[in-house]
Image (cartoon, rainbow, N blue to C red):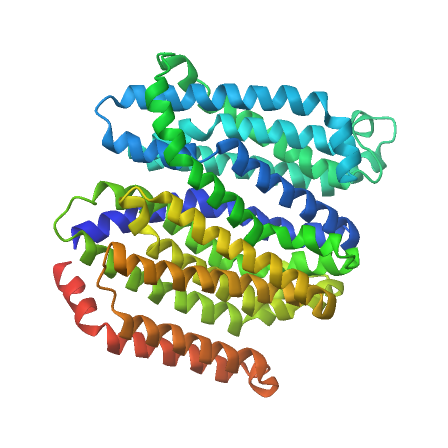
Length: 485
């Protein structure tokens, strides 16, 4: 069991480092929805959707390729320098081209040119930090990784609080003072991006010494192999960006009112609880998958890990959906946004499906068939786009939520079926199916039956019943862990 304990420990540390930055979406969501009208919140969501796309393009699968070749190549310094140099020059080229054409991009996107400039710099600084962060993970330095990431989110959060809440008061109280010189009326959206830019800049400053430690040797032969391995990851990343964020862009393209897009985007954040769990898990599990691929019992290990992911994920899904009417007061305190609360169950479950898919996708990464992952992601993106175009005209943003769960569910099923043919893993389908089925049933009862949705005693009973079912199913394993302690 020490194997699982080490995995759990790394997942917790990486989880804190990644969940806390993601938590900024939760912590700032109440502020944004209080300060910004729904139309402006929609603008922020749409810009960040485009930001995600360009993040994927600027990394072009190099992060995953780095882990793959760092574990397989004897000359690890060569892998570090080649990956670093590659991202360094592509980032600088993007910076130059994008800044020269920022006015064109501003006109094309119908976004203030200042926001475009801030976004370009954020993208470049984040791209330049990819390999230094990846090296920390590969060298098993989760605490250093966590401190830097937590520092980034803390600064970003503090700056948002200052610019959006404190600065207006300081400027108003002393019109001739310093703070009035940096305060601009109706610039709340700009301050959001300024905060991210400052946090990204200081984070890069912290990791930048890595650029002076490496030998600036570029192995073109290795680079070609890394690009070949990473290109399908790039395609998959773009497809994932479509699945997770393209709905905001499509909603605008299909003339859904900005107010509705803002409400949808705000309530979507409540469904991000599952994203936090999935993200933390993925950071801990990806290096683990590669480093244990040669073990004799690797397949059984992967099967066990997947089962426990489903157990934890099922509980989180049920808990969030059952008590969503409490969470909305904390995360979306402005009642004007609550029209879109009905999307939360679909978004939570969709991200749960995506987490299961992450587990199931191990097979094509281990046999160097990442292009299969790209194909699966493309299928998911196709489902997303088609269903969005079909459903948005009739049911607006709810159609986007339906498309999301359909896309991730499709990817999950396809990956399982292909994986069992190429790299069989003995998943405990009976238990996984029972946990998943019971979660969906109890969640539907708690959310869609009006009397039960208003009765917290019954909903607490549903959660406790589910926990008891887990205990009965996993009793022997739990007892064996306790005895080892």
